[in-house]
Amino acid sequence: MTSCWTADRRDAAGLHWMWERATARRWARSRAGPGLHGVALDRAPSERWLGPSGWEVVRGDAARLPFADGVFGAALMVDVFEWLRHPSAALSEAGRVTAGPIVVVQTDWDGLWFECEEAETGRELTRMYTSGAPLGLSGALAASAAEAGLSVRRRGSVTLRGERLQPGALAWDMLGTMRRWLVIEAARVRARRFDDWLGELHAAAAEGHFSMLLRRLIWVLEGTGGNG
Image (tube, rainbow, N blue to C red; front, side, top):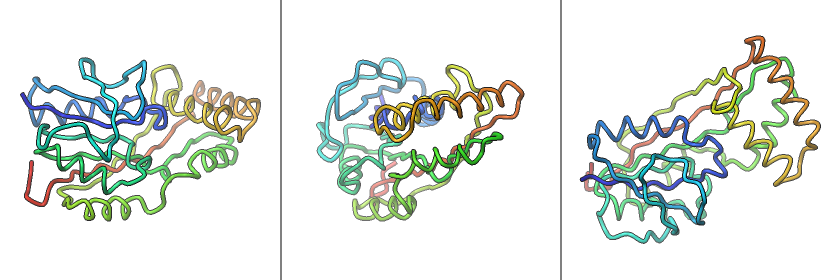
């Protein structure tokens, strides 16, 4: 049975595996068929696992993985690269424990956009939310992979478009995460101001004039020996 481990920052990424889950499963089926077994890694224990069902969730450090060499058939890292203190060390560890490809999916926050009449407010709040995102994401990822001794097998990007604003939709989860960060955790925006903008978005969605764009990078890395 081919196995896969994944590192996921659900609380920070805020996309709740809506797109990643489908993408990962399609990729997994093409690589390993229906018998894929997953092990998920997180720095802290979580009461809710939002990835595929049946996966074991373990606590660990991405730079010091608690796994043996070459034990996994593939690795999937979803929106975790930007949170790594030592990204080259984490990628090196991924290469050590993985005998196959390492798939890195990372949001390029410069590509986050909400379209509605109150565009200026949306731009300001989006800039505040993404202000800590890394600059030159592709360059940083390439440099870290090279330092980790990994080669880039394939690279690309995809732009996700969300036009629904209701529970379970991509835009709903993204806006919920933005509100939690800006209003509660960082306390950078008053709740009333954010909620007024959110009301404008709901009104636009009700009239069919709402959309959200989100760009993501998808890279496939492998050991220099050609694993995968």
